[in-house]
Structure formats: structure tokens, C-alpha cells
Image 1 (tube, rainbow, N blue to C red):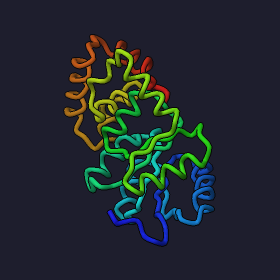
Image 2 (cartoon, rainbow, N blue to C red):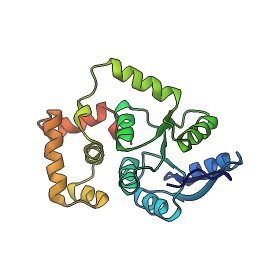
Image 3 (cartoon, rainbow, N blue to C red):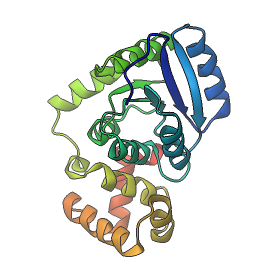
Image 4 (tube, helix red, strand yellow):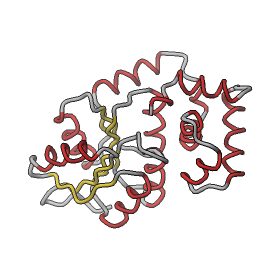
Length: 216
């Protein structure tokens, strides 16, 4: 990852809604020091754009068709562990926030915040800091005081597979989305049941819904 240039911070915007990308491109580029060098609307294109442009900061939504932002974060960080990724999403469920940070995100801001929040977070992440909006800090603080979730036993890849399964994707579709074999997805499915204590697929779906995964 390149050091932040004196001329400004290069940004890759990843969101599956063109209007959102257009709106935030205008917001970011109006700052003078932030420059959107590429856009993507899915996890695969986000990875390709990252390889092509090597941006200082990736601004990544979680909710996208097929593989989610969690998978994109994993892939990008696997290629470059120093990649700086800011999650910018409407979702604030603790299980997703923790999964994003575990996958390698440097920050997490929700879209309910003022545009200045994401601008400040981008600059913080570019400096190598961990950034999060006040509502996310509150969510994590509350979660630390609670008994936690049954999904806390799961890794980010398992969270992603459960999310897709609970959303109605078949084993074959999940395998395609994540570039895995059907057998590997089946093994993950078994491990997820074992770790969460779910005896049936219906229990898994209810658990995912309770933790907010089906909202994505």
C-alpha cells in the first residue's frame, strides 16, 4: 500500500447502489484532498479495482449481491495485509461489526451519520487509525457488557456462509459466490451447526434472523 500522497487520498468506492456512489463521490471530491479513483458494485469487481488502482482507502458497503463486503475485505486483505478498508453501511448489528473488524476492516461507519463522519473516518483510516462512528462505538460497548451472541463462535467466512444460507441461497450458489467447492460449503455448514448448537436448518435461519444477518 502506498503512503498517502501529499496531493491527497485516493479512494475506491464499493456500493451496489449507483445513486449512493454518485452522491458520496460528490461529497468526497468536494473536500479537495479526497479523490475517488474507481468504483465497484460487487465483491469481485472491488477486488479487481483494488488490484488495478491500489487506493489509499477502500470505502466498502457490507450488503451487496452475491458475496458481501465481508468476503471482499477478506480477499483484499489476503492480497495486501496493509490495505485500509472503511466499512460504510446501513447495518449496525454487533455480529457484523465484529466480523468486519476480524476480516481486516480498519473502520466502520453507518450511513445514518452525517457525511462529515465518513469523511473524517477516511482521513483517520488513511493515517493508519481505527475509526468508527459514535453509534458503532455504542453498539460494541453494549455488546461487551452482554452475554454475547451464539454467532460469536463463528469466523467471518462462516458468518458469510450463514448469511447467504439464511437469505435463501443454495449450497451450489454459495460455492459459486465464494469460489469454493460444494463439499467445502457443506463442511462449513456442518461446522456452523456444531458451533452454534443448531440442530436443524430452520434453527440456523432463526438464529441468523435474530442476529440481524437476514437484513443484509
